[in-house]
Length: 363
Image 1 (tube, rainbow, N blue to C red):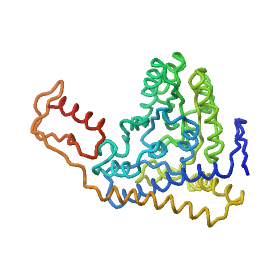
Image 2 (cartoon, one colour):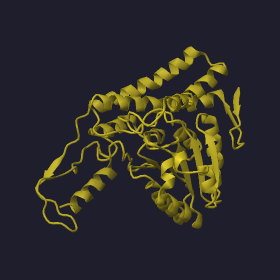
Image 3 (tube, rainbow, N blue to C red):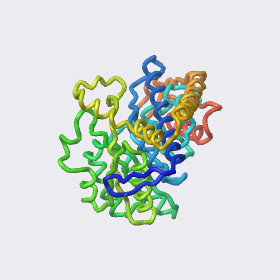
Image 4 (cartoon, one colour):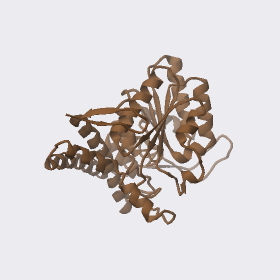
């Protein structure tokens, strides 16, 4: 049995029910992870704000379903879903976000700077559009070394108004870099509608740089996967960089404490009607999958995420050591400066090496 859709760009998707179920459960895993993160933040187990990707799960799932296991991935501060979909241990991700021992970078990155040394997930960046030029560097290295890799970088619609993004587009085209620019367009540049600053579609804007560009409805994960497959193959064939705009709903605030006073009730309701998980679940039930079976499969995923959270919560807070003085390249001694330079047996070898080097530099 198969399900078929034709997204606005005319790329047809033909997935079996089993394949759609796999994508649905992958999105559901991200949703469960983000809901657990919000709960942890609410009870004070996470310090600082978090930027969940609830409603945008189809982007990492649909794109990475078509990528190879070695394709490098970079994301924004709303990138938990990309880390999860890259196969990073959920317990290690939870530990990192909570500042606990055994986090992917020893609790040094937290929510906004998740990265996983030694894996293809090269990390998040809280500076808007900063990931794009970094992705160009990664792609240039792969091209120079003759590696068959497509560097994938995600960013929000607001990032397309940053100078770093435009410079990255120009360089990628000029050097024919193997990079896929994935714009998760949720319609809001923090608290400003993207429509208030950009009078044309972002896809049209990208084409002006000479890039192959596609736009797809993120409410339909099948369409996202189909468009991603075309875009990734375009880049992998050395035809040049590509731009994929995924229209996703923003089903919450810009961050966890955002009360969204600037947003209308109608806009919020419209976003919830575009929930990709509701869409995929509806398709699965329409294809004949029993509701009880689907509920059971979803519960298995939720239980696995909850267990990972529990494992992370059982770990001790990250140790910190105090240095009486710290010298920078242009400064004298600074009293009572704290550095998170302690290593742990649970840290990966690459993390311990990185921390040791940093500690030596900071002496």
